[in-house]
Image (tube, rainbow, N blue to C red):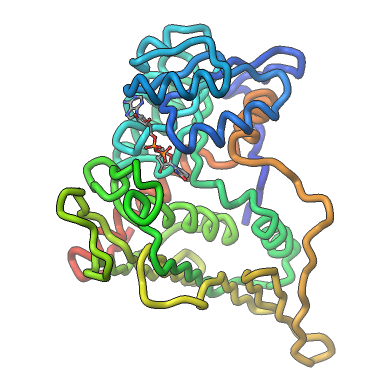
Length: 362
Ligand SMILES: NC(=O)c1ccc[n+]([C@@H]2O[C@H](COP(=O)([O-])OP(=O)(O)OC[C@H]3O[C@@H](n4cnc5c(N)ncnc54)[C@H](O)[C@@H]3O)[C@@H](O)[C@H]2O)c1
C-alpha cells in the first residue's frame, strides 16, 4: 500500500514550482459561505494574493470583495480567467463546477475545486483528463477531513502497520436534523435540488467520508458496491415551495481488492444518535475514532485498550493551504483529480445500486 498525506512530486508535470519569493495570484469563483473559509486560509499563507473574484449575484460579489479587499470583481468567470492569475478556487454549487474548472485549466491556471467534485463520474473524468492534458494541478476539497488532527493521528497510527492487515472498515455519521438549505445554511436551497447539488447527504457529507476511508485503506481497487439511498418523510418536512428531491440517508457496503469490506452509514436526518464513529479491524489490532483515537491490541496475549494522545502541536494545514504549497513545491496536492474520479464512480454506483436493488460490480 502507498500512503501519502502531502502528495507526491509530479516530476515535471506541474513544472518546478514557484519558489518561495514569488507571489501566487489567486482568483475566487463563487463568493458564498465556503469561499470565506478559503479566503481566510489564503490570507494566512505567505506570498499569496487574492486578486480577483467572481459571482453571478452582484450583492454577494461586492460583499466578498469588500470583506477581503479584492481589487478585481467579475460577474462572469470567463472575464476573471482573462486576468493574470496563477490559480483559481471554484467555490460554486456543484452544477457550476465543471465549466469553470475546465476553462480555468485550459487558460493555464491551477484549480482547487470544492466538493462534491462533480455531478457524476463522467464530469469528474473529463476534468481529470483536462488537468492531465494541460499539466495544471486540479485539487479536490473532498480531502478536507484528512487534515483534522484526529484523522492525521489515525492515519499515522495505521501507517506504522500496528493494525496488521485491515479486513474491515466501518463509518457511521448520523445527524438528527442537519439538512443544509433547510435546517441550516437556509440561503442555499440548492443543496436540496438534485439538478444543482448532484445529490443530498452523499454529495454533501458522503464524499468526505469516502475520501477519508479510502485514504486510510490506501486507495485499493473497488470491486463492488451494494447500497441503499432514502428520502424519508421525517418531520419537519421541507415546504413544497422548496424543491427537495435529494436523499437524506445512505448506507453502502463496498467490497475492495484484497478482501477488505467498507461500510458507511451517513444521514442528515434521523431519529438516532450516539452511534457515530469510525472503526478499523486489522489482524493485529483495531482502531476506533470517536472523541479520540483508541487502539485495541494484545500485549503478552492479553487484550489491551490504548488511548493515543493528540500531539500538543498540531499541523495547521488545510485543503487550501495544501493547494498553495503544492503549487509552490511543484507536487501533487493531497486530493488528486484521479482520487476525485474514484469517489465519483463510487457515488454513481451507490445511486445505481439503490435504484436497481442490486450489487454494482466494477
Ligand atoms: N457551506 C459549507 O459549509 C460548505 C462546506 C464545504 C464545502 N461546500 C461546498 O462549496 C460549494 C459552495 O457552497 P456554499 O455553501 O459556499 O454555497 P453558497 O450558496 O453559499 O454560495 C455559492 C455562490 O456561488 C455563486 N454562483 C452560482 N453559480 C455561479 C456561477 N456560474 N459563477 C459564479 N458564481 C456562481 C452563487 O451566487 C453563490 O454566491 C458547494 O460545492 C458546497 O458543497 C460548502
